[in-house]
Image (cartoon, rainbow, N blue to C red; front, side, top):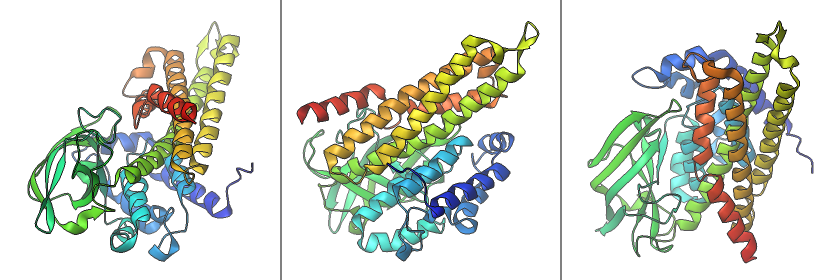
Length: 379
């Protein structure tokens, strides 16, 4: 199969790579993640208005570049290389994916605003008891006249401190774990009754615990059919899973490159440790994990349009391999660097933190192995 990028895809990758190299070096990143805001809003504005990067995965009719999942993967891999904390995943990949799937008035309204950089969306789906079960919801949205009243708690909502809108999963019917009765809402993040507790995450981003206390939301906040949103939610989470696999590939690439460079500089017994055969083998093993992760990510991305079970199996195969590869590469990078590998001053430790978080994001290796086995054995 030909995995060669198109001319437009090469342009997206090269343009974004040059921009990030100029504006997102490690020291600069450290300054703004340690600031009160936790980010530099000018970078998001530049991605939208100067580079048009937020439109890479949207149709031309909405003002985008006509791309899709591959373009998202390209952007996410480049963000991974610089440990980018920009809310591209929840806003463009997840919310954008949901809007593209639903279409209609909501898509016409919100997609151009996302492309312009005016809308930032946080995905509020995880609950303390839910683990990786997307249907395990205690958050409820009960009918109230023409709209709904939302109550519940969502945990570790990435980018919520910066969000203008929230994409929320809630139960409009059925029992706590039923597949039926799950709905999806896109709501204003500043509605009365929304309470946030913001905090920094270990990988340098910001997240929130969000509590909905009798939040009144309009009927047009509902995306798709009432109580029938679980297939859509599963689809956008699979798209997000492949996107973080692409990010992981960029992170793993930098872990390998940084470790290889270190072995060429660090000397023992008067020679660079890169001369030691055992470390040469380690560098090769790390390189192979990076390349396998990249290949599996491309495979998963290309199969996102298949029927649900085939898509899920491909995504789980990719995430299982990438999660295990990220762990291997990260641990070997730290071991090779020794004690300095976990210091705040050295970039390699921060890449390790992000690789560790990606391992469990949207399902860890064991979860995806189990899902893959259940799908393939059932067939």
